[in-house]
Amino acid sequence: MSNKELVVAFVEAMRVSDVEALKSMITDDFTWWITGKPDYLQTAGEHDRDFFFGFFGGGADMFPNGADFRVTGMVSEGDKVAAEAHLTAQTAMGTTYDNAYHFLFTIDDGRIQRMKEYMDTHHAKMTFGL
Image 1 (cartoon, rainbow, N blue to C red):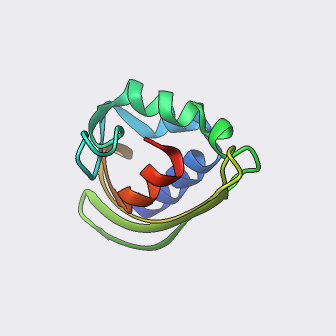
Image 2 (image 1 turned 60 degrees about the horizontal axis):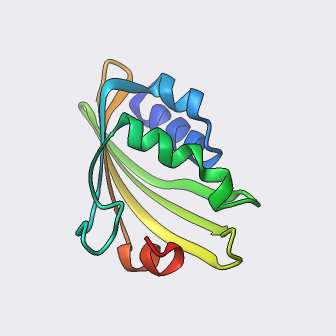
Image 3 (image 1 turned 90 degrees about the horizontal axis):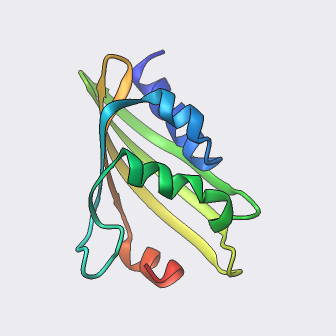
C-alpha cells in the first residue's frame, strides 16, 4: 500500500470509528497533535495513542447518522503525506458540523507515526463545547 493509500484508508477508518483498523495502521509510538490553544480548545495539543483511541472510539456517539469525511487532495514526498480533508455530519445534538482539515502525516515502515491536524478550532468549540 502506498503512503497516500494508507492515509485514505486511515481517514476512512476514522470516519467509521473502526478502532481495530486504526490500530493496525499506526506505530506503537504514534502521536496526534491538534492545532490550537489548550486553554481555548480542550483537545488542542499533543496526544498519545490512548487519547486517540478514546476519541475515535466514541465517534458513533458524536455523529449517530454517520459522517461524510473524505480526503480532497494530497501531496506525498518521502515519509510525509499532506492531506486536505472535509467532514460534514449532523451531531448528536442535532447541529451541523462542517469543517475543513489539513493533516500532515509522518509514515514509518508502512504505518502512521505522527498526525498533525489543522482545522477551524472555533467551529469545533462552538459545535461541541470542547
